Length: 187
Image (cartoon, rainbow, N blue to C red; front, top):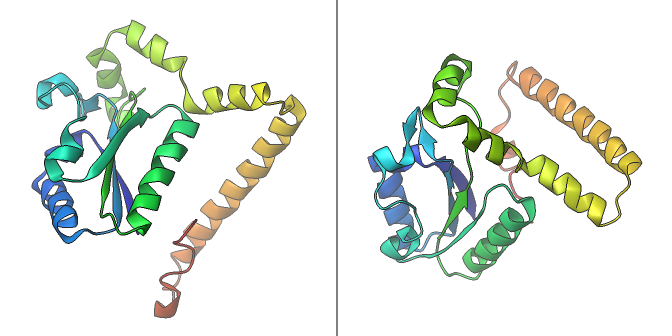
């Protein structure tokens, strides 16, 4: 099974439609997630997309789909898990739509343009819905202590830093072909 994320802007490419259609026709076990972050390189969604959302796209390709809150870690996990179970059961691809908002530019060079594309109030309201902060609040409600959260953050930061160092070091030599599938599958 394969999983890929694409932004709302990249759905306007021929390759996106060809790939999704081919996967649907061939009943490929793949999950396509459209990250509807409301803007594509400074172009607001309503300026490059009709209708106003993506909710009808799964049906248009003849595949199962769902829309979820892209700022809610638990919603994202649940929708992806359901899609994965369907794919593994031979039901073909799934198309998920993550409704979210881009809080900045695509890169530092267009940060100012990104901030000028939408009203400041929109950034303020979406800023309160930061996925990490929302999940942290959920964990606190579930009884996870601030001390434990701090320890987890330190552990995860160390893990990410090690992975980044390994990735940079891996550029020094090509891996052996038989290792191509190592670390690419998760349940």
